[in-house]
Length: 221
Image (tube, rainbow, N blue to C red; front, side, top):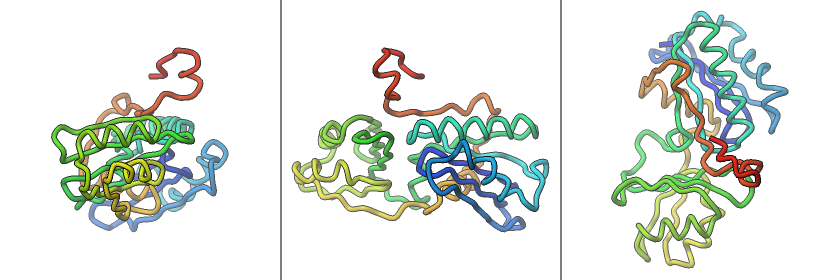
């Protein structure tokens, strides 16, 4: 299968393309900063420079959590392209995009949105725990599962939560993420998983409430 992938929740907007069998060499492009709206289409054009959209078999997109604006833009672009070309769409969570395919069973994956707020998915300590909020609150949620003195394998960026975990004597061990370019990570995960759905089924996970929603009482979902 030939895949086009888009990602905007984990930093600068990025796009990538490749195929399961290697016939289409993997390539990628990314914007310089938080300019997904201004540069997003140019980034996609760079990746599609030598191949028509109609030559692809599927579109993959990062579905969050992460940056609110970048996520909305990437998902809108992905759905528009999938509809236009009649292609199936695969949604890949930010947690899955950050974790390598051979990640250890017990791990925490952190995703940052606005300043001072993060989301975490904790696996291997009973039922999966997903929590979003201020760093201290996340540390408390993790400490309810992870014993004092234990080592916690972490993907993403735990830098905001690490000091609060250290106060609870939980040892944070940061591990390399799946890929430096988020769209490449989404591409690899989609190739491996092959999860396909219609474009309506890919929905955004905003994690914590957007700032405007928290003030207005709108749940923002």
